[in-house]
Length: 132
Image 1: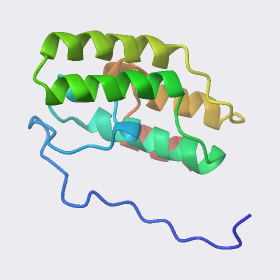
Image 2 (image 1 turned 90 degrees about the vertical axis):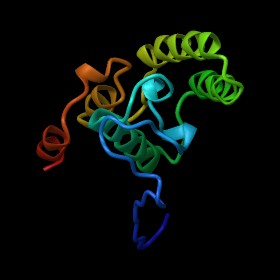
Image 3 (image 1 turned 120 degrees about the horizontal axis):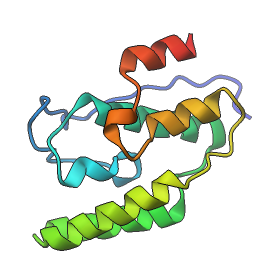
């Protein structure tokens, strides 16, 4: 147990404008679509959902999901977009069945924030209201 901890989140210069390509990422906090779509706010909501999960559990996301995302990253670096798309679809399937083992109401909020479909994720305002 930690008696007192100050947490800070930062982008370390990796932030990009909505609609631009993501040039830097941390695989563990990235949504599946990060390799095939331009930056959008739903990607930040996903990352925040993962951050909330990690803070509550001190665990990473599902290992199978992270393996698929790491393989997608390797394919992306090698310029093999067919492989990227396959691994992204695999990651989405794995994410859809992921069960964050945290108590409610956090479980349902984290599931929504990390939904494989970015259109189903709540907005940042929705998340702030849910956490208030």
